[in-house]
Image (tube, rainbow, N blue to C red; front, side):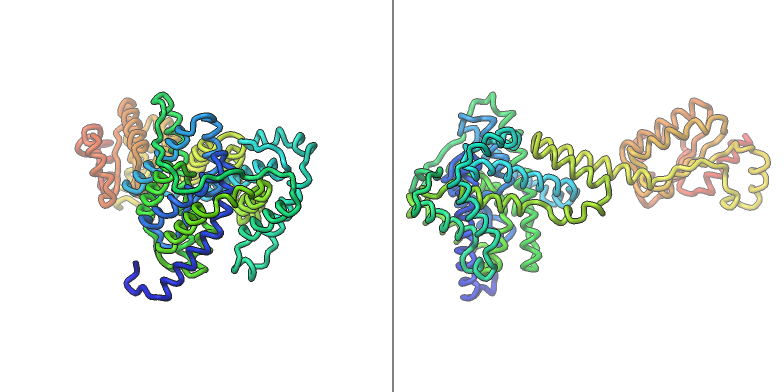
Length: 536
C-alpha cells in the first residue's frame, strides 16, 4: 500500500474494483463458454487469478482474468484432450508454474525484445479466431473449436439460421458498439448488453440456447492428476499458455504505467500471474492474464492500488454465491455478440492503417505469423515469427557490415616505408578490413573473400572497427587463419584492446594459432611486422 493512502484512495479502489468486476462478469461467462470449459470456469478463473495476481503481482492497478488469447489456447487444449478435464487443469497448473519460473529467472525483461510484427500478427490472428468461432453461436448453430471448422461449417450454419439468435446477437453488438461513452461510464456496455439481451430473450420466450445451470457456492479443490504419458503434450501447451500469458500481462502493465505514470515490476508481475493461474487450475477455473480493458476501467474509476483488484475478485465471488441461478438464463448469442466486440478490438488497427507504408519484409513477417496463428497453430506461429524476425535483423545487420580487401593504403604507413612497400611488394602485403559486427551473418561474406588472398605473403586482418564478435565469428576467423597458414600466408590480426576481443581470443587459443607476434592492438606495429616478414 502507498504510505499516503487516504480515504479518497480507499473510495477510489472500491469503486474501481466494483466497476472492473461489473465489466468482468459478462466477459468471464463468455470466455468460459467460448473455451468449451463452461461458463462457471470463467468465473472461477476470474476470481482466483484476479485475487492472487492483485495481491502478489507487480502492477498495482492491473485487473487480471480470462482473456481472448488465453481462451483460444484453452479451446485448442480441450480439442486435444476432449474427454480429460484433469489434463486441461494440469496444463493451466504447469503454465502458472512456468510463469513463476519466468519471474524468478527475470524473463520478464526480455518480452520487450519480441519484434512488433510478431506481436501484431499474433494478436490480430487471435482476434480473427475469436470472430470466426463466435459466428456459429451468433447464428444459432452449435459451437466449433477451430477457425478452420468454423469456415468449413459456415455454409451449413447460414442455411439454417436461427432468426431469434441472430436478432439477439445484432441487438447485443449494437449496444456494445454504439453505447455513448457518457452512458458506458456509468453502466459498462458489455453489462448493459448482457442485461438487455437476457431480458428480451425471457420476455419474448425466444427459442435460443442459454448457458444452463451454473453451480453455486465455493468450488471444490481439484488436483490436476493425469497419466504420465500425456506429460509431453501437456507441457508443450502449458509453455504456449505461459508465454502468451506473459506477453498479454506485461503489455497490459505497460498500458497501466502510461496511465498512472508509474513503473511496474515485470518479474514480480509474472510471479503473481503464475500463482493466480495455479490457483485457478486447482479450483477448476479458466487461466487468464492482465486484461487491458478491465485495467483501464479500474484506473479511470479511481483504482490506485492492488486493493482494487482484490475488490474486483470479491465482487465476482458474491455474484457466484448469490446470483448463479440467474446467470443460467443468459443466451449464448448474447455472449457471442459481446465476444465479437472483443475479437474486433484485439485487431491491430495501428499497423493495418499503415499497411502500405510498412517495410515489406516486416509486413511479410506479420502476415506469416497471422496466417499460421489462424490456420495452423499458435505455438508454431510465435516460433516461426521470432525466427523470421531474427533472420530479418541478421540480414539487415549483415548488409551494414563491410569486408574489404586491398593493398596497404600508403596514408597509414610511416614515410620511410611507403615507397618501398608500394614499389617492391607487388601487393605481397594485403589488408582485410572488417567494419561492423563480426557474427554468424558476416562469416559468409568473409568466406567469399578468402580466394582473393591466395598468392599474398602477409595478410593483416584489421578488426579495429568491429564492435563485437560472436562465437560464429570467432570460429570463422580461426578457420580462415588455418586456411591462410596452409597456403603459407602469414596472418596478423589487429583488434582493439578496450572491447575485450583480444582477451577473448587468447582464451580461445588464438595465441597458439597466430604465434606470439600474430595478435596486435596497434595497426602500424602490425604493418612493421608484415614488412619484416617480407624482408625475411
